[in-house]
Length: 251
Image 1 (cartoon, rainbow, N blue to C red):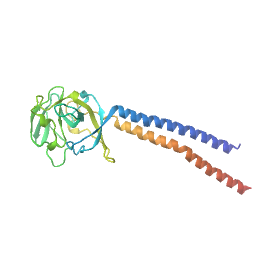
Image 2: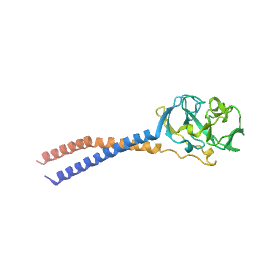
Image 3: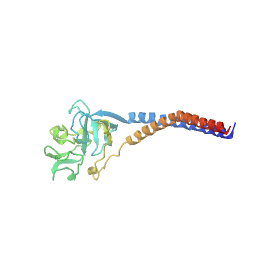
Image 4: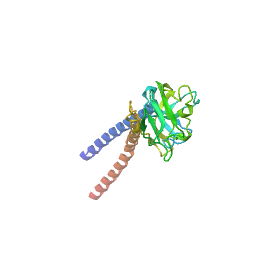
């Protein structure tokens, strides 16, 4: 056996080992990413346009399962409150326990007397269809608004309730991290900086980007590793024909 042939066979065995490792690692990342995502995230369909333009009617979102005490101002959350309806609802948290929420000062929502910038609101529309009288959020509860204020059945529609339109923290089921549907319009939800200077600050983004990266990298490794065998075989045949031609020419 020639040295050239031994070298080719050695490279072939190494390539097969590496491709096998790539496929195995890819499967771990791909399947692990899906399992991790399924444990942490829950998909929801938003039936109304009360959160436009952030989330449109019929959009499907990915929401991280969290406990109510993890919620911060500015978060878009999925919650269930029996006095608001029997289905999960999606709204934005603007006030937490102890906050004084009011609208409007210079056309802006105020929290504890501080004006809050809300760039996520529809352009050309006010921050609320009507004024919000100063409302103190009870401890352990949340004040929620839709981004489309004129048509959202949110805390402003329940101001006359016993708790001033607020919901308990433990009513929260998840925090929305991304809009996943319609196809081709995937986007992550940004944390609104207008609430950053208030006590407690903003919540940290969930691990959705890491989960998606693991799935994509895993898919690339699986496809790349699986493609190695056919590609290597085809290249090997090409080299074999080339050596045969050279041998015939030499003879």
